[in-house]
Structures are given as structure tokens and as C-alpha cells.
Image 1 (cartoon, rainbow, N blue to C red):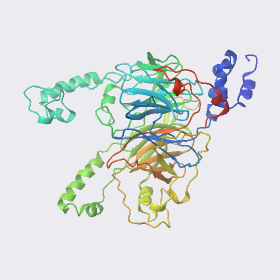
Image 2: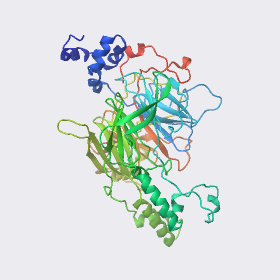
Image 3: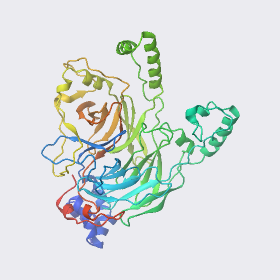
Image 4: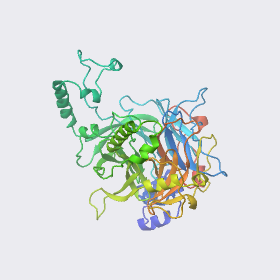
Length: 538
């Protein structure tokens, strides 16, 4: 094959479907050299169809995730609760989805055990315990255009901001008697000399460059079935420091209500959204990384204002006018101090960075280095206020009669990847963000304080998915239209429960996970390639 001109070889191989082409790498060294070394498979990666199968959702205070997907009664359904994952147990364990990458899920069980699971094939593997010091977050890397093996990467946590130990002789409330360190709010009330010493120490340690030039990580590889330490070497300079990580509004001091750090795999690179306002772009083959600063979010959103008259009408039965106005002032202050949530994702044109504040949306796309662009840079792609569309949806009189096209699936049936999960709009559920004429406005309720949950992007269409009070919506970036999909509120969900994370799921029939009957602890054995040769990636 080395004698064939590269153009001719590429023309021949591009006639082979990408999935079988990936498997041909294992047939002979000559084929592997032709496909991998010449980069032909990577060049054809964009031709692999990536059908949206649904969205996995983790909920606060709920023992398992659920699966929100298009209604398709003719097909078996995905096991949204991951009930077929792992060995049989007398008591159902607590589980959540930690990450998704190209059809494989990384799942955490009972806060300590990690599994890699393919919902389409029901094959799974249990990972050995994670090394100490590398248990902050794990990320799954699986790129079937490069290899059918997978890796799980866990980076060491950034050093914590120094804290002041409890000082003898300083009076504390009884509820803090068991604490060994002061909280941020309590530090402000300490003597000035003690605070100055703390500030000096924090300033000194916070000036350290972050991330470091050599970033340590623990990597589990399905090739050898064990964790190994690996160093990723930074390329280029970095303008971030530990103080940026500590001052991040979505930092380590906050709770589950904050946006998680997202990670996506795109064309041979892995993009990790880090606290501190930057993205790490990891080269999976060279073990190097670059630091990409995220767009600045200072003063890019309009602060929402509560309407006094509406607020008084809403609470007039519960409190007098003076108390109502005090409550209004408190809630307006919360809105004024609200930080935008940020999300990293991918769609048709590559890596997207998304910022949300209440119902305001801004989307940037990352442009890779090219002849016309010497550096990686973000370009603002879309900007909109979706409040008019949500208002119109919740105020229309026929809202209860709108046909839903998606449903929440917590069943235990398997999936069928041969079903065509296309995308069809239901005309009566599509709303123009600029408003429509001829729609009757009823007496529904809509509150700007509810905000939106970002659920993810369609893998091959310019569509973003949002949740509002457990109602699912699709938003078309190109036409600025909002489509109601259905509810993803589990029947067992209590009041005030919230979504934690969500993961766009695209099915994959090919992996090297062991058959569930032959699963061994931490070891992945090779599967037959029959499904690979008969099924394309949907």
C-alpha cells in the first residue's frame, strides 16, 4: 500500500464506511499504517453520522438518573436508570452519570465505584479504585475514529485556598463548635490583624502559575486495565494563576448548585473546562496541552428587574405590603448578584462555550488555528433573550393540549440503535423568540427567577436543549425559535428538587467492553467485531 499515491489511497478508502474502516486497523500492519499513519480515518471522521438518541439527566437527591428522549413506541427503550449496569445486588445502589463520550458512559456508584457502560450493547466494565489525590473529577475519553479502547483521566485538584484554623478565645455560635476552620463569611468578622495575615498568605500562594507546566494526571486505560500516572506538558504560555481558580464564582467552595466542569472530545483532542476561566485542550496522542482563556463575562448581560405590581399581586394573600416590598428588595438583590452559568459543549461547527443568566443566552464558537487565524480564538456566534418565548409558552391557553414529542424514560428495557431518531418539529409547539401573532394568552404563570437549565447541544444540528421547571425545550440557533418537547420531571421528584448534570447521548454499537457474562474487575477483554461490520454508527 505504501506504493499507492496518498490521493488515490484516500479515494479508495473513503468509499468504505468509517466504522468498518476503523476496525480494519486490526487486520494488518499495512492497513493500520495506511489508515492511521496517513491520517485518512481522522480526515473522514466528519462523515460519521452522530444521531441524537436522548439526554441522560442526574437529579438532586435522587438515587439514579433518567433518560429524556424522543417518543418512539416501536422501539425498545434505553435503561435510563442504568439498572442493568454492574453485578446484581439485593439493594439498588445509588448511581449517577459522571461523563459521556461518543456512546460510552462513565458512571459512579455509591460515591466510590466507577463503571464504563455502553447502554446500546449493555456491556460494562468496573474500574479499580482511584488513586488517592486524584478523585476530584474523572473524564471519559473514547474516540472510535482513533481506537476502540477508552481511557479515564483524573487530574490532581488545584491547591486549596489557605484557611484560618479556629482561634481559641474567639466566641462562636454553637452550630460552628465542631468546625476546625472558619468559613468565608466568618473570616470577615475576625480581628483585622488575623485577617491581614491570612490575606498575605493567600496572596503569596495565589500568585503561583496554574495550571503547571507539567500537569500530573492518573489515567486508566482499557488496554492494560489499570491506573497509571501520566504528565501532560503545557505548550505555550499561561496567564492564569491559583488566585483565578479561587476567585472563580463557580469555585470549590460552592455546592452542587454550581455548573459542573464540562469536557468534550473533538477531532483527536480533548477539551476540559476548568475553574479559573480557561479550557485545557489535550492532545490525546502527544500528551501535551494548551490553555485557552474563556470569553470574559463582565457586564455582558442585562440584570433582570422584578415588576413591583406583579410581585405585590403574587404575595398579597401571604403578607402585607410592607413585608412584601422587603421581600421584593431581597429577591432583587439576589438577581443583581447572580453569576452566569457557563458550559462547554460541541455541535456541528466544533467547540461551543455557552453562558446563561436567567433566560439570556450567549454562545461562542472556538476557531482552530488556520492560515487565516494564527491563534485559537472565540467568536460570538449567537445572542438572545428567550424570556419572551418562555412567557408566550406558559401564558397560552392551549398549553396543556400541546403535543409532546419527548418523554422521560426510567424503564429497564434495552435500546435499539436501528431506529431512525430523526428530528421533526411539531408545528403547534414551535414559538418564535420575537413573538407570534394569533396565539391566545391565558392565565398561566411564568417567573423570571426560575431561570434555565442548559441540557446540551444536538451533535449535528444547530439546536440547544434547555429545561425550565423540568419542562424540556429545543432552541434553534439559526431561526431563534423555541420548541416545547415534554416534561422530564420524574414522578417521584419532590418539590424544589433540581437537575444536577445532563449528558447528550449518541449511541455506539462498537467498543472493547467485556460481555456482561464475562466481566472481570478492572479488566476489559476484546469483543467480537461482528456488530461492527454489520452496523454503522448512528
